[in-house]
Every structure is written in structure tokens, then in C-alpha cells.
Length: 510
Image 1 (spheres, rainbow, N blue to C red):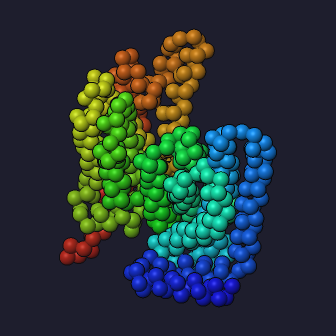
Image 2 (tube, rainbow, N blue to C red):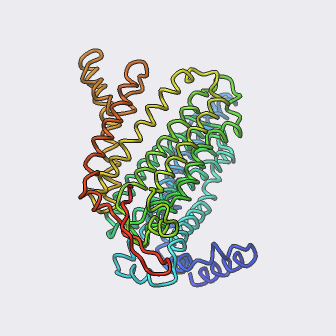
Image 3 (cartoon, rainbow, N blue to C red):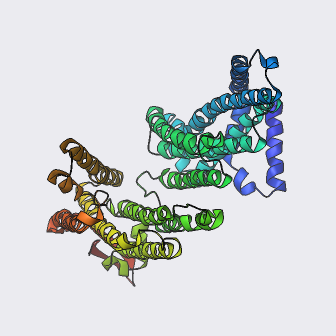
């Protein structure tokens, strides 16, 4: 094992010097994990057990599905039967590989931060030169290299599928591509969860919840699609992998920002603006690149709604992330207002929201003009936009009220998201239950839908009433924060040098 570790270290030195990857591979956490795992017998025994499991599963599938009367059937049926055996072996091997890729590898790498906290060595990292970016990238690279090692070890047994046939090389590459992307997304989620957890049990519980969600997404859109049970085109696979890759990057950025400062926001203004533009431009880029808009029977109305509702969801998240929680001296908002005193009188978040709304409306208009002119969404578009814009007001008022009541930023954000989920998602479901019980429309169901913009999607009946309800609800939530005690609690003191040191108390919502 010492020779293997030396060979591995020499290989990484060659990669860093020859390919210019020193900025990525010259990572102290990655080097430590490679040395520790290569010198540990646990890795060797784990790979041996993994290969034994693959061999046993493949043998059982082959023995259970191999027909004994194969010589009595025609040549065509014989070829189809043998091809089905190869596909069944491939499916069984993918199940075993998915357990390793989606469960073992990410859990090992994602627990590095929790392990440092349990050993009381995490505080020492904060006083070293190890940056949060280096730590998170090292965890992701550790998972990536472990997955490549596992996939490489399974290649000899995977060759059985070529003996029987039924599986092409493209299908094998697509499956492993989706496995790799899903495992990296799950690893990024585990690292993000570990930044706020001090015990491994809490990290494991939240990671298992994410595993279940990612497992459903992966098996419904990726692996099953390759096996003939769903999407089979390469653009669909690239779309699923792109979504998982983007999720990995977003979770990694959030983990970097919260590793040493758990009270920090998930994204800053620039990062969230890039994400917002990506969500707005994603459907247009996808339609132009994949050629889905020119296919017969293409549901272009869906893509118009994707831009419309996707931008609205990003607006809601922006208000929750940037408006929930009180300001703290030294954070990025405080520094912005120190640099530009104009923002001490004008809330820069409201200006940011106005820019986001303008970009959202522009993207909706361009998408509708390009792809939605022949659909039936045009007559309802103005009503939809009015309702969605009105629904942003109670979100902002709720975040301001929670900032007044709850000092902790994380608790304020969690409470805002929980309340919005209950009011906007649960109430329409309850309204549907009332209508099912009553056998038709009822006043109680219509009244519950007034509180949710999603429940007011019946544009002919109550779009105006729902928009008015959103405005009234915003005023009711905003009223408690207009008192003198609320303004005093939300007040922040800024200091800057203008020839002499001064202090000025400014209401952040003025």
C-alpha cells in the first residue's frame, strides 16, 4: 500500500505540473485524504467486497434468467433472449453501483467537516490559511476520485454485458455519467449540511432526506430513461446532468460561505444575480440548442410557464434570503452601506428587487414573443403577472416581521420558508379536499384559495380577489413593524471616516 500511495502521489505531481492543474489539485485536504485512504487497509477490503458483490449479483441474475431450452428456439428469439440477459446483468450492476455512488462515497466525504467538529479541531482550521473554498473543493475532489476508482474497478465485470449483448457503450457511459453527477450533488448537499451540524447523526438524517429526493429524480429522469422506461435522448440526459451539476455548484458555494460563518447568507448579491439570469435564460437556451421548439407537438406553453413561474420563485427566494434576518456589523450589507452612504437612506435590497422584476418581465415578454404567440397563454398573461407581482408584497412584509421578532438569521429564513409552504402549498390542497367532500365548489374552498397565489390560478373566477387579498395581507403583516419599538430594533449604526470619526443611526427600511 505504501508503494501505491507513492505512485498515486507521483501521478498527481505529474498532473499538476504537466496539465496546469495546480490550482485545483494542489489541495492539502485532498492530499491528506489520499494518503490516509491509500495507507489504510479498509479501502482495499472495501473494493474487494464491492467486486465480490458485483460478481455475486451478476452470477445470480445470469443463472436465474438463462433459459435451459435455448437450443430449441429460433435464432432470432435466441439472440433476443441472450440480449435480455445482458441487460438484466447491467441493471443489477447499476443498482449496486448506485448504492456505492449515492450512499457510501458522499457520506464519507461529507462527514469531514463534522469529523473535525467532533474532534474539536475545527476551530484550528479558522486560524490557519486554509480557506473555505479549499476545504469544500477538497471534499468534492475526494468524492470524485473515489467514484472514478470504483467505476474503474467494475469495468472487468461490466465486460460480461458485452458478451451477452443488449447494452451499448453509449448506454453504459450515460448511466455512469448520471451516477457521477448525482453523487457529486449529494456530496455537495452533505457538505452544506455539515457546515451547520456539530454531530454526525444530524448530518446523516438530512443527507438521507436529500438522498431520497435525488434518488427519485435520478431514477425517473436518468437511469430509467436509458433503459427504455422514460427519456432516451442525449439532450434529456445532458439536461438532467446539467441540473445536477448546477445544483452541485450552488450547494458548494453555499457551503463555502457558511463553513466558517454559519450565520452568513447562502449567496451574495452578485452570485444570486448570476443564478437568477441562468434560470431566466435556461429555457431559451435549451429550446434553441436542442431544437425542441421545432419538433411537432412541442409543448411551448410549458416553457413560457417555466420562465414565468421560475423567475417568480427566484424572486420569492431572493426576498427571503436577503430580507429575513437583521443586519450585523461587518457583514456584506453593512460594508455596502459603509461604502455608499446613499444606501443608508435607501434600502439597496428594494433596488435589487426592482432590477430582478424588470429582468423577469423582460424574459417573460421575450419568451412569449418568441415561442408563446401561438399558445393560449396570451389572454391570461397579464392577469398572471398581476397576481404574482402582488404576491411578492406579503413575502417582503413577512420577512420584515420575522426580522423584528427573531434575531437569528437562520431561524428567520427557516420560519419564512415554512410559513410560505404552509400558506401557499397546503391551503390549495385543503381547498381541493373541501370541494371533493362537498361535491362541487364551496365558499370555504374559495376563501382558502384567496391566501395563495397558486390557489388563484383559476383566472376567470378570483384572480382579482386573490391579488387584493395579497395586498391586504401584506399591509397587515407590515403594520406591527411600523411602530417606534420595531424601528429601534431594526436600526443599525454605521461608522465611516469623513475627516473625523462619526456615527449615524439609520433605519434600514427607511
